[in-house]
Image 1 (spheres, rainbow, N blue to C red):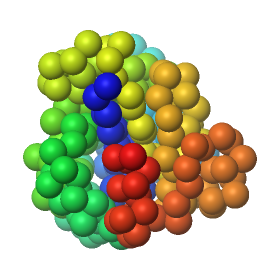
Image 2 (cartoon, helix red, strand yellow):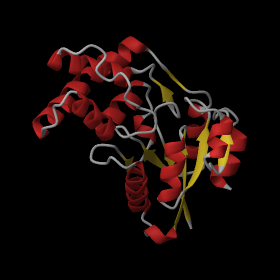
Image 3 (tube, rainbow, N blue to C red):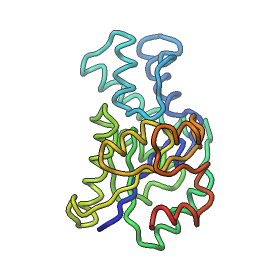
Image 4 (cartoon, rainbow, N blue to C red):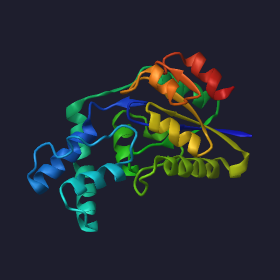
Length: 224
C-alpha cells in the first residue's frame, strides 16, 4: 500500500504574518471603500472560496463577476503582501521535507488556498517545487473535498489506484483533522497555529506535535 502525505500550508509549513488577509482587505477596500472588510470572518482551516464568498456576502456583492474580480485583485496583491509582511518557514519544515525527499516519499498539498495563491505563498519561501500535486480551495467550500482531491491527484501522480493508498494529512486546525477523517485519511496535527495541543487532541487528531522540529519522531509517524 502506498503512503501519501498531504500538507496544509498556512501555519503548518509557513507563517505569512497574515499576508493573505492583507491582500484580500486591500482588494475589498479599493473596490468597496470598506475598512477592515474581513473583520469577524474566520480564516483558520477554511478554503479561500468559502472565505471570499463570506466577504462578498457581508458586502452584499454576491455575483459571479464580483467573485472573479475579488480573486483577480487578491492574487495580484498577494506577492507584495508577502514581501511586506515577511513571515517565515516554520520550525523543522525544511529538514522534514529534505528527509522525505531522501526517502522518496509521495508528498503533496491539501490546502484551503487556491492553487495560484498556494504557488505564490510557497514560492515566496522556495517551497513550491517540493510538492508533486494537491487539493486546493479554488472550487471547494468543504475542506474534506480538498483532501479528497489531493488524495486523487497524488495517487494519480504516484501511479496507484485509490484503494491502494494510505494517507496522512498534516495540518494545524480542527478543520484539517475533521477533513482528513471525512476523506478516509489520518491526521497529524501541529500546534503551530491558533490551536494548542490539547484542543487538537480533543478534536480527534491521530498524532499531535508542538511543531515539526523533531524530524525523527515525525518521520516515525509518517513513514512507519
